[in-house]
Image (tube, rainbow, N blue to C red):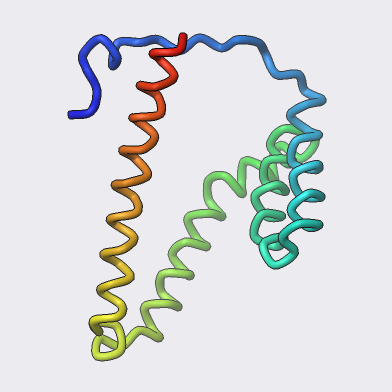
Length: 126
């Protein structure tokens, strides 16, 4: 266990409220920076920014509700079906694929532990 009971009881308070303008400008500025610095990642991040912008603008409320609830479930099902239909066991269960999965699990564990340790360090400073 990397945390003590005292650390788990820490309550985080919001320092300030984020204005509507900031919530709308953030995805726009983020997408512009990503498009300039990492153009290959722009389409993926563009969809995240578009969803965020739809939710925060409040103009397309019905569309935003549909995308957040029903549509995302349908898209997830179709994506899983299409990937699963192309997947063949003898192609998937190879040492290289299992190694990649293992590396992902290890990276997740290291990332989580590093985040907890960084929080401990920041708690010492404040």
